[in-house]
Image (cartoon, rainbow, N blue to C red; front, side, top):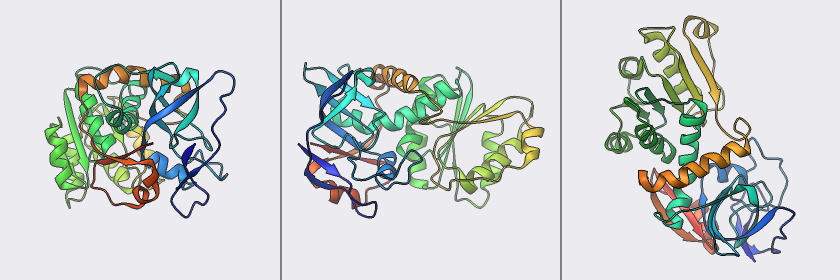
Length: 316
């Protein structure tokens, strides 16, 4: 079969022939229809993701849409190197297959499911967002952040604040359902965060690093009731892998910091979230800009510059 193959962490995957996968016990052979080029996929192919073991070669790809040999259209996720989804065929554990209802095309699902899952796991499974609560999305201008805004609204959030660096994309976030937006590049960002998000119940954090330090100080320092629980869920680290957390922050406010990702959520929890989203996404109609690229052009797609908020999906 044809697949994308990573033979060096210093260059993009190359389109080549590799042996067909041989399904093991309890695995199902899936004909791949679409596979998203997500940040998670890029970091895995660069050997920088926290799950990487540094072994090469590998076929990149964490998830995808495919069709089983008995004709079912399915979504699958949680693949581990060296067997990824950027190939014509992949062997998937039967327990990780989620049958897809009609309503969205293969490419849209491949583009939306991964960022939607990160948002859904954080909001529903880690923070347990309840109707009437309020949310701050840090890093709201990317695909995942935009979907976090849409899904928070679907879950009944009373107030949603979106914060991000790109002013133009923030206007899109506002149109998608954010009640207030905060540019993280503003000189008075701390004051704006304190004013707009002082009493939020949940923070979904895609940025970490210095912006999180600033936001955490601004939000916890401005709460009208410091004892009211603030659930801060870390999902991504686009601004840096570490923060400095003053000890006093944890004593003067009731803040609960947790993470959401591989390891903090069980494989069964991941499958459960995908199953929920498979039904939910056709109702939400996710706003995702997608560029579909033939798998044979994977090297060019890997290095191409795309607009903020645009997802690349490879199609065998």
